Image (tube, rainbow, N blue to C red; front, side, top):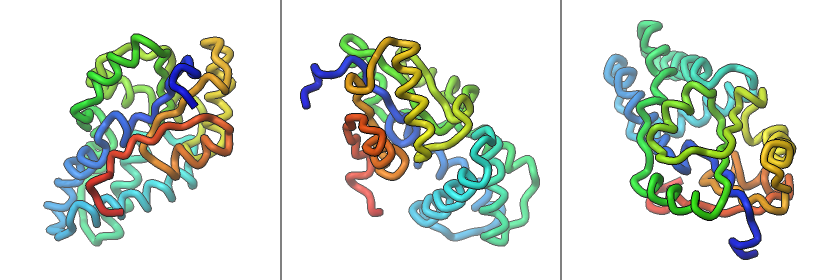
Length: 208
């Protein structure tokens, strides 16, 4: 496999281009403070990941900002914290505040010179639009869970990607390189969909 074999790079966004772990950790601080909870970053993120996965499976068509609010309420209940509903809503809208990784904008600007750049993300369009201001490029296409009606790792997301890449950009499956951090959300289903993959290891210095 050579990079010159591909015409388009498709990207997961959160965890690959945007530092969602830092974003989630920061957004959880009011809950942790109000509940006087003594959880470290890894414990809090692990709990968030479990509840997010369950909620995405239970409500695959729920807009991501609303899903985050539900997950926040679930976490509060699980941790025995009594909070006001507006904290759930604030957490749901926190995507706009999640930071980009320090190398993201420069790397995307370079790659844009040679490839079509496309987003395939477990998010809604409004939330992604806020994140997009941090990424520094205009993407050739943006496909979100809100558009598709399901969340990765559902195979429907990758079937949608393949179909729309050809219909919208004239790019075939064999010309796509999917670039992502998450093995479960992206690499496993992309492999099943017979899409070439590149792994961006954002957790090389972390446990788990």
